[in-house]
Structure formats: C-alpha cells, structure tokens
Image (cartoon, rainbow, N blue to C red; front, side, top):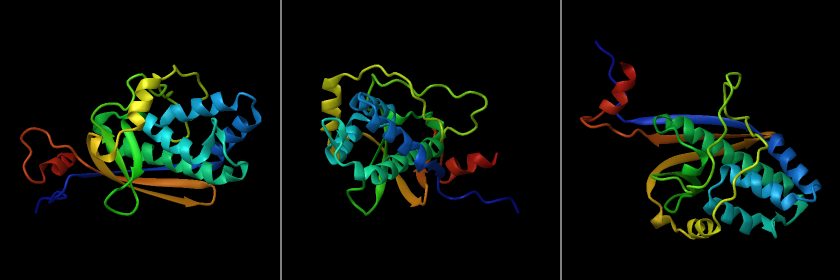
Length: 208
C-alpha cells in the first residue's frame, strides 16, 4: 500500500537563541555613550518599524532602556522574537523571507503570539540580512555588528500605526519558550498551494 500523504499543508520551523548573546549586546549598548544609536541599529536589524514602536513604548525612554534592572527581561524578550522570526523563515522556506517581512505580535483572537508573514516587506528601505558564509550552517547565532542605512522616518511612523486589520499577509502560529539561558520558538505555517493543487496535494509534494 502506498504511503498516504499528510492531509493538510503545514510546515514547521524551530529555532533556539542563546539569551546571553543578546544580553551582551544590550550591556555594550548601556556602557557605550552612543547607546541610543547602537541599540537603535540593533533593533532595526530585525524588527519592523511597527515592532520597534511597540518595543520602544514598552522599554525605552529617549532611546535608552527605562530601567537597567529590566536587562534580563528585555534580553529574553528580544531573544524570543529573534528565534520566532528565524523559525518562521524556516517554516516558510519557499518564500525566502527576510526579518522585515515578518511581524511577531499578540494574536487578537486567542492567547499567545502569531506571525504575520507580510505580502510585502514592512520596510522597503530596510537592508537584507548579510549573506551567510559556507561555515555558517545555521542562521540562528548570526548577529553581526554592521552599519545600516537609515530608514525613512515617515515610513516608520506610518508602518508603526498600522492596525491588525490593516496588515496584509498570511498568519502563522508561534510558540516561544524560555529555559535558563535559552529562548526557543516554533512556527506552524500553512503551505501555499500552487496552481492545480487539490486537497492534500500541497503536502503530498514533499513525498516525491
């Protein structure tokens, strides 16, 4: 009897991040007199303008951490978000996603988080992540310290003010967990059918 394909077109991605690597970046930012610029550069590395706005309103004052005592909580938060975006990129491998095409936010209809995989990038002026070298098998730990082109402020404000109902894209399920020095994330995404797919054929393609 031939194998019966999984009847639903789902794809799973997972990722793990060492929280201390994020914490080290934040500590450097706190110790550096140019902390606002350094921290802003890091946040622009992987958060959309919308996500930057939410993060800043919760944790920052004038571009600085509101309370140094929140360093552990902020490190875990950002590590979880980084892991969630990497997990989404792996789950939606057919899209070749970039960080700025993914918005991680609370689900409006259920507890927990969701990933919104945007039909278009959240910031057209955001640079793509640097290419990985052949020695880098996993993108999880690649957090380079590089300069970034400034984003257009008008676009950032406009993007930050977009509501749930105004985002256009595919929703995926996200689960983030923390254990000690590590943050893990799992993404469950729907596979996009191609013309001619019927029933479970999208899932069946992976068998052949």
